[in-house]
Image (cartoon, rainbow, N blue to C red):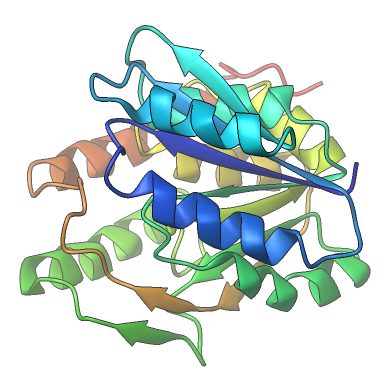
Length: 240
């Protein structure tokens, strides 16, 4: 199988239909084979039921339903490891980065990169609907902190649109420990430690006003970067 798309979903009944329709319509026009895995991570609304309707319409769309909520990092890890594709993309349920933007990714895989990530900080990126001011400032300051301690040279480590080769995905996500949304930093740090080549690509991003990231999450993310740095430096990961 050529491409797997993984979508972590927690209480996404309102947004997931539009996103799935958009992804299905795009992928159905491609010449390669594909699958979409939606990981409903303990959703308490009818996310799973809605996704099930799509699976009946198209067997290439699959549901992984977790009864308990374990966090975005857990859901992405589960989907990436259960996927079958030679390339594995995870994307957010809000469709802030539309699936057609993987067209910008393929040339870099052809050049030998193992991980290609979306960025709104790279030159050429465009945004629709600006974020709230505190998210912009905390995001910029947080990124400088993450670069200082963990990922120098990567300007946008947490955009929810990242693609890995099969080998890189299995190597990295089998080692990811973080269950929350700082797993992005951990996955990229592990990829670097394992000598995989990472490319940051500018994309068009549409800010969703219903974003679930809250102000209180930013201090946690700063501490999370230090925790990951400590784990890497003290041999907490099995990297052989």
